[in-house]
Length: 331
Ligand code: SAH
Image (tube, rainbow, N blue to C red):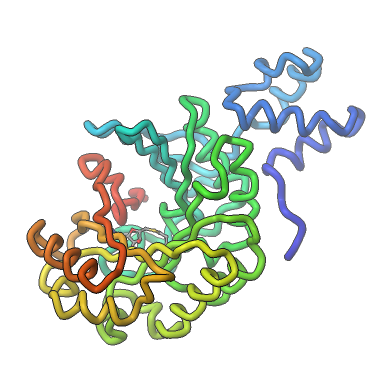
């Protein structure tokens, strides 16, 4: 793997700090990671230096364009990169006090999963580690955060270097590796790298959505490229190396993948030692109808009966189109 790119501003920062002692860049990062909102707060830096930095090194790689607040406390922010690409991130506040940030790894997504709004928008580009971290830093400036999920726009395994570099810095923001989750459709080259290279206990989630290959290909064309048995085998390798279960995400689509027989096929595919299932109520994006609560409960009961640990995901931020699969910035 190439050298990790630091917080992007660090390149500019390094130039700016060329005549300063080497610990200066670390000082600046430490302040930013603890939620400072500008150089002026960095009181252990000489004030002429703070002024010079403020003038020459942008404090974030992203600018905030819009912010929406849900009645459940969820906040969605639309950012722009310096080259004008849209990026969305979401802060979820849970009643037990957890604060979880959902970050994007790409602007748009090149994959075309039929139930996901991000797949309908134009793919722009991979984000840098700094652009990923700046999403989390934005929320960190408002309040402490303790969880991070790479479940926003894009496929993290298509941008694995930057995702790994960003994940490695999250503990400085208060998010431990155990509370960091990277989600994938099963993009094998990136997934293999993730399993081989990330020795830290970062969690893995697999977007599965159907156990039958033909149905999965219909829902997620990427399934034709990387067959499910290979993807499941790679998840098993993650479990064997890390001893941490893989979360399986399964969006519940009425009359499509929510029949009790389909729960049985899912239970046959997944080893309960390796996987836990998270059933996701479908968030409307147009094409499908979500399963009824009754159908979800029956599906869950069948999986549990077969020994597969199963939970139903709490839906957050649906009223502001901030829920799973709804991130799609206009333009
Ligand atoms: N590309 C990665 C990271 C994004 S995670 C991945 O797909 O895993 C976003 C999660 O939301 C995925 O599990 C995705 O399948 C799910 N999702 C997409 N559209 C959804 C929708 N309309 N309702 C509920 N969940 C959805």
